[in-house]
Image (cartoon, one colour):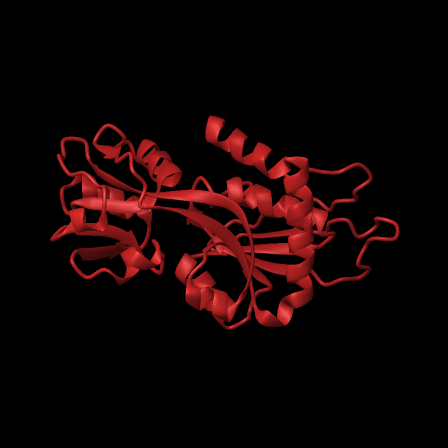
Length: 262
């Protein structure tokens, strides 16, 4: 998935199967006049279980739309890097403790803006509700959720209004797949999550005909790359790389291709 510019010297990633999937990519170290000579690899954390944006392939390692975007950003920033994949809740803790240089795929909250550098956004996601195919439930405002049980994913934010609301119940699961299976089994009334991800996962679980996505989104959520505050130089390099790729249309092209074929 690496997108190589003319003259770039790129070390091939080395996937390691297992719970921690590590890809080592030395990118752009020999570019005359622009390389950061002998720079240690940046440690990049991401989810191992959030298709189609980021997941662990047993052969290729880290794959997905967000993985491809972040690789392109790191290549443009002339940064060598290591990607480590893990459960999202563990990745968040790693960022909190500054054990990594960056974590990608974050939704901005006031607390996260206070605690980290947030680079981006690098793409938008549409948060939506899934219901059973035969359900008469609708969504126009949060008031429509009165008394319902909503399937959520652990440590995920769905916008401040939803996160603070108390007039419905949440049934947190380790991931969206488990929430969708609960929905198909009638154990929750709705599932909330990224629209593209819920559609993708429902197809791969074989329950696409048992659930449907409601048309109105809860919120459109920009996604960011989070860095500890003591990585200001890395944040600045990523911001510059993001601006350059946006001007070129490279990120839009990646997103469009995944939405058409993913």
